Image 1 (cartoon, rainbow, N blue to C red):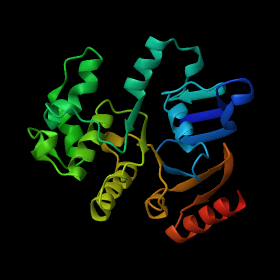
Image 2 (image 1 turned 120 degrees about the horizontal axis):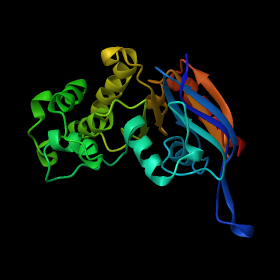
Image 3 (image 1 turned 90 degrees about the vertical axis):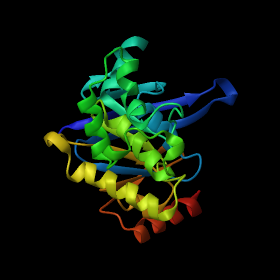
Length: 247
């Protein structure tokens, strides 16, 4: 199985001199295609920085990032923008939908930003993937929080990216709606459309949320601090307790 994303000796430092803060230290990681990975760690452990660098939203100070086989180090800003647009999808805790646009128009936005005429069948397929094909004409204000997050995921999926990044995707949702969303992310990986290998990388602080993933990666002080395969909420919570106490 090849990798949707690979990180080699990834280091990210903010500032310089005595005020420099190293958020990531020599991180080596791979995210194989067709897998669901959760990233956890105490506050300040570097998990959000990891997600930003892995998604090419921020450049590392040193090390290499490969997305869908492409080394981003040699890309100028225009090429990097195109890579992000075509090969990655990003879902935030805040849904970031444009309130004046319908669900269908919000999903089509990445195509318009790329200078392409949106293909309605492609947009409808993305909405169908998240179970909202009947809400295509609804604006965000007419949708529940869970439905808005599903539109955000459809927007991230419309270009059929190599990897979907999610930063606390259930953070603004109630428990029941959050579970429905996680079931949907799980299904994207287990039953991808058109035989594509869907890959999900998710940052979360919740052991119950992390248990939906195939594996959980733990960060501490900017470095890897272990992983769990086939995680349970109890095992994740115990590992997080150990990390917090040992700091």
